[in-house]
Amino acid sequence: MITLAVDCMGGDHGPDVTLAACRQFLESHPDARLLLVGQGDRLKALEHERAEHVPASEVVTMDDAVEVALRRKKDSSMRVAIAQVKEGRAQAAVSAGNTGALMAIARYLLKTLDGIDRPAIATQIPNARGGATTVLDLGANVDSTAEHLLQFAVMGSALVSVLNDDPQPTVGLLNIGEEAIKGSEEIKRAGELLRAAAASGDLNFVGNVEGNDIF
Image (cartoon, rainbow, N blue to C red; front, side):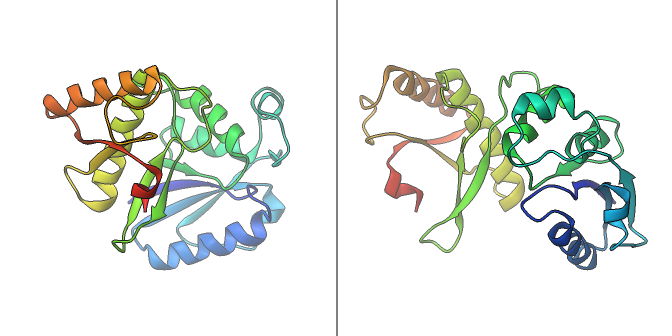
């Protein structure tokens, strides 16, 4: 049985929305249990045999600076939820809260896997084939090196492999044109690294793609 830690205080509306979502999740996933993290009195609205309340006295707001969330609010629901993963009580943490704070706290508490320098935000964008295209990175990093883009490709490929049960999802490098000579020096270098990864069988890299190819 998988266990997820949920930051119930996160998001624009907090427990009013997150607890209802947790209840719906529990009803539709009988093989999962939840650790509901938040201010105790706010969690009373959801009692369930597969849900445990985990207290946290503070809340990371959507306006909090990363420094505040990371250094000052050490008992925030977000941090306590992530700590459940570090302590082995949960396999993953879920939060709809401040994204910058979530990334910073997760990186600080959980670190990154060997060979990965930075986390990356991914999302699925609906496409014309009736499925979705997974795009990353979407917000955490302003400047990425060629090596970082290769790492994002590896992480994205692994994610889609699991979500879609596809052992070889295609990987494209978003650029201003499909030709290998297009783009900044960093992008061209990333293309070289991705082609090398494809040649060694590590990625199913299809080359550069333009914005319309996402859809």
